[in-house]
Amino acid sequence: MNITIVGTGYVGLVTGTTLAELGNSVYCVDIDEKKVEGMKNGIVPIYEPNLEEMFLRNIQSERLFFTTNLKEALDKSEVIYLALPTPPGEDGSADLSYVIQVANNIGEMMTEYKVIVNKSTVPVGTADKVREVIASKTNIPFDVVSNPEFLREGFAVEDSMNPSRVVVGASSEKAKNIMAQIYQPFTNTGIPIIFMDEKSSELTKYAANSFLAVKITFMNEIANYCEKVGADVDKVRLGMGSDDRIGHRFLFPGIGYGGSCFPKDVKALIKSGIQEDFNFQILEATEKVNTSQKVILVSEIEKYFGGNISGKKIAMWGLAFKANTDDIREASSLDNIALLLEKGAEIAAYDAVAESNVQKLLGDKIHYAKGMYDALEDADALFIATEWPEFKNPNFELMAKKMKNKVIFDGRNMYPLEIPEQNGFHYKSIGRKTIENK
Image 1: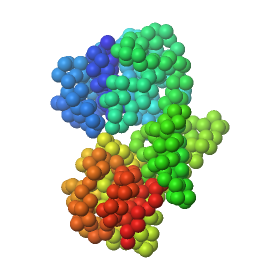
Image 2: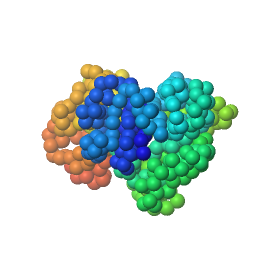
Image 3: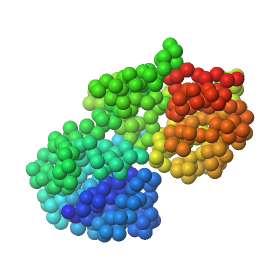
Image 4: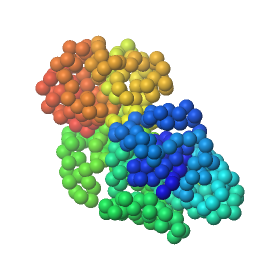
């Protein structure tokens, strides 16, 4: 099948490459000429493990194409996926301006039946708005479908090729049949496709992400309570996760959630509720707790240094909001950097993948180290902000030689407590006892 993807951000590029891998001819449209030229030349504009290989394979197989010309791609395709940004506005609601603008363009340009697929995360009722906009521009028949994505950054290729389910909101039998045909390679292997109405499909994405944000935040609250009463959150987590009603995933405590999805979607669902005179109290509490959780270790750093960290050099390992991505949107590292700088600390940070994105944002406000051990040179303490695999088994002997103080503040609980203890480090993590070494 011929398919157009409008928008080559994270969702659009992964979706387009996946659909090409499934044998379709896919035309990816973006207004950024430089980006499009780069993709034509095999340059993947985002970091995502295993994406480049699949991306290049489908370009070489002539199933994946890139253009700035929407009309050209539209004329070649029966199905048009909208993978456009829906950033939060000042009030937290999702900004649909990109989606509405492209819907206008499609209505003006289409010359035959199309299925318009909302892949972007959008509020309940967006499919109706898109339908109204297109219908105001044309009399040609079309259908609008909701098909939310459930990709995890860092595992997007795996998730896109082996989804747990495919959710499709469609009221037209013709559109349902077309979507079933697109996803037949998945359903043939037992992956379910769940058909529902468009509004339920739109809400499914917000509900899923918000639930996971609540789950993470609840575990962070439990971790903080563990410290008060002397319990070990790792033991609690294992005990809870062994209950198959709960499961082990998203129970790892740390310095809050970030990224492009959870913060944005929680805000948007809260705002959508307000518009319907409904108060998502649990989500409001989740947001509040997550905001404070992100910087919970700064007070511990201050406490260790007697209440004053002015002039202290803090090494920071990790800048991305999570491992295996270059995404720094809502990253906890940024909140901690801002607060530490405000309190007079100096920061030497290392992140092999996300550094350039932070440098564009912060410039020379912090120092960027060439390697994880370079960041430790004369450091008063180490702050671990991202759970990159390369940080899991460090050379503690070398760390001790590089640092002024053998002190680690671990926002991701990277090490069993006995490891820093055996190496003589003061070690403060989340929800576990502090290993004292002053």
